[in-house]
Length: 291
Ligand code: HSE
Image 1 (spheres, rainbow, N blue to C red):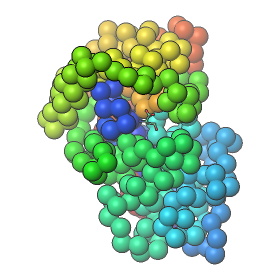
Image 2 (spheres, helix red, strand yellow):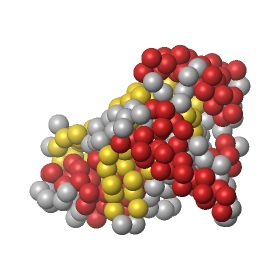
Image 3 (cartoon, protein in one colour):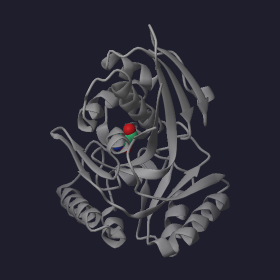
Image 4 (cartoon, rainbow, N blue to C red):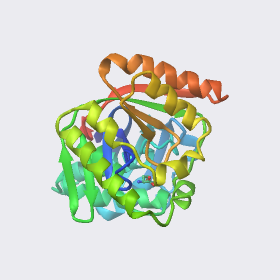
């Protein structure tokens, strides 16, 4: 048997829609795999009752097929589905790393990214590498059609997850079809600032570069209390705040000294809007770990 822990992730980071992602120190999914004649799946943990165990419909079924690695796959969900924290990507990433090990397929971490993305496509409709890449490789990742670039960054984060559900499909439906040249110029500037900040572990630059005026405002409409939570986090010292992935989780970047105050402020702001939430005080973390 092989056991792998794969972390939650936060994709987009505002200016890097469908490209940027970071691994979070926590929460995480844990996947156990054992050789079998055909693939069977068992899911326990956070939100497991909403996750199909049919290999044709579960994200890890597609991964097992792509690696030609039939197995009994037990998924212990630490990451709630439809959270914006890369829940399905973490299961796919963990399964890809675990099955590669179990069957000695010899694939590199970079080679496993598109394989895990096939699994993600089963639930989100599209194959995006921006969650599976950091879940497999850790750190900050830049996923483009030309491959994945990886930066071993370390920045404190607060991820606040409200008790509401936003499906990735719905969140993609509201993405504007067009952006102006001014918005393009602004986005390039912000993405470059953020990337530079990641190379320097600088929360000020990362936070500044997370701003986005194209996708985030459209998606904010789907998250009750988003503006109040964003303002509360900034007032408490966050250097940048944005929607985590497709939402509804909200991600704040900060200095370590402000982390606790920001976490409390975000929870209070959601509560003020009548929304229960939970919060993770974390940092950019490691990729999938084999036990
Ligand atoms: N980049 C994707 C999105 C992440 O924001 O829709 C979720 O798959």
